[in-house]
Every structure is written in C-alpha cells, then in structure tokens.
Length: 66
Image (tube, rainbow, N blue to C red; front, top):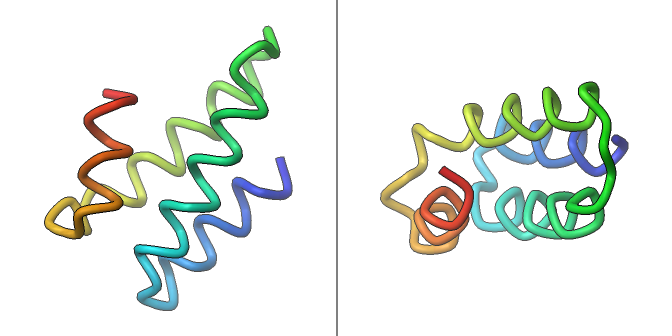
C-alpha cells in the first residue's frame, strides 16, 4: 500500500518515470494478494499515470496492466 501512495505522489510532482518504476514494483508485490483494497489502489495508481502514457515506462506499464 505504501508503494501505491509513493507512486501517486511521484506522478503528482511530474516524475512519471520514477512513478512507473514504483508502480511496477507495487503491482509485482501485490500480484498474489487477494485483496479488494489492494486491487483498488492499483487502479488508482494506473489511472493517475494515464496522462503520462506518452512516457515509454508508463506506456509499458499501462499496456501490461490494462
């Protein structure tokens, strides 16, 4: 959960590459967790990154988790 907040904070300060890196780590760690709250946070993070879809790291992440 903490990584999701960090990813959003990084996106908020216009650091989409770093945000995508943190988000990828968060998604990797939560892949085997059956939690509605975790799934909801993942959607929040991915939605927050959508305005940066032209950034290669973000585009790759969004494509992998659409």
